[in-house]
Length: 110
Image (tube, rainbow, N blue to C red; front, side, top):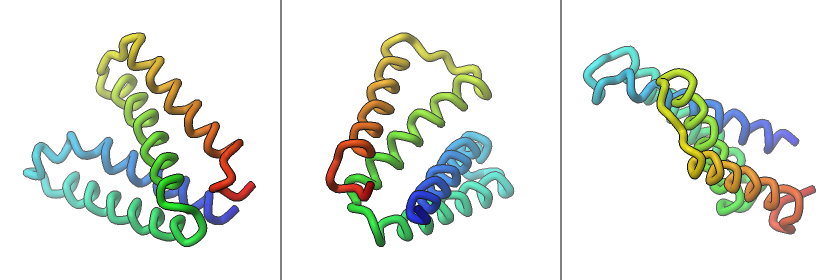
């Protein structure tokens, strides 16, 4: 169970860092740049802890899939970036794929 907590932390830090990336203005603003780099560092640290117990392909699928969905939601809410129907459907398929991996794959502990 701790492994999944590490994965949640990795996702949270990656989403935070990616959300701040726009505020760096191409890394010309110091504080957002430091926060972004620290967020990515923490994300990769927690991701590495997750890889002790789960296969890299499964971890990366969950990490990247969740990150895509959360970043898209933040972009829609915070940055007012529109999502059309194909984008929403595609993200739904990503969520479904992550669910299939977690529920049915023998590559992950249940």
